[in-house]
Image 1 (cartoon, rainbow, N blue to C red):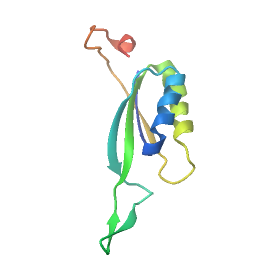
Image 2: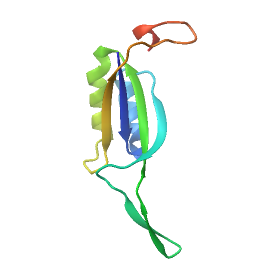
Image 3: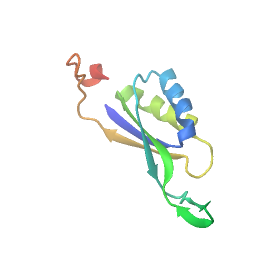
Image 4: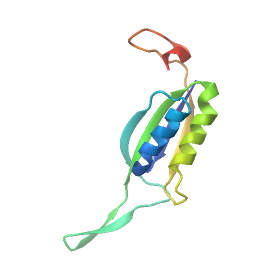
Length: 112
């Protein structure tokens, strides 16, 4: 099992969710986050004063998948989150030792 953590542009969330659903991923966790990388940020004008916005709004998606779903899930996220512009985001793949469904007590891939 693997845990996919993807940081993407907020307006791409619906496309990514639909793409993951199409490849059989049943559940995702979404968190609104802020961050910066190569995109750096931008300057804004507020009441006549210019200031720098370093952290840009992003969406973090966490998806637990079985090993056989890994490549289709990565491809689904990559294709649907892609704009070709700086700041499209990143996908991190982390080993997932165990998963437990609280309601039923199922473990491993049955819990996904």
